[in-house]
Image (cartoon, rainbow, N blue to C red; front, side, top):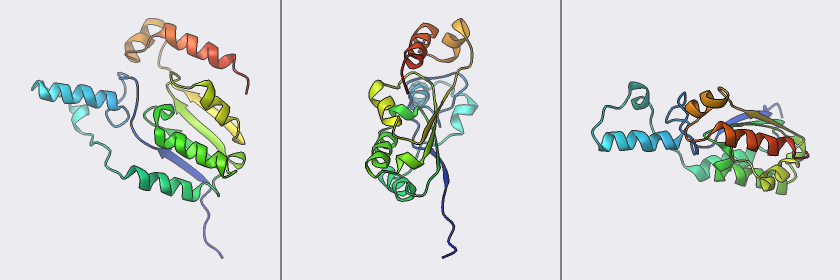
Length: 168
């Protein structure tokens, strides 16, 4: 009966993202992969940093099943990506945690670019013991526009104000 019990997991479900941030890599943004593929197709030189990454090669259902198997003991569940709120696997596991009454015991920590949360998703997150949102921002105004392509600071400010006005 001395078997260790998993209490903390840090999960990156996939690299599905809606942005091509300048500091990011194909490993964390499928949109960057699309650009790299287009460059290769046109026989353009691909930057060294883009060529060192391999595409995700995993069985998504197997990974999702592993997560579901341990959620009953988890106290802290950290999610990164890509953009977690675009990950079907993440959202399915959130639903699973809620349906099986595990969410009430889990502190959920999500790192996001802040562009894709919705009221439906935010309502689900209320089921967790605690919800911590880490929004990644690398600059303001024109700097944000430059780094977080193709999103804009104006859109980002609007999203953050919507989040501020949301009641947890």
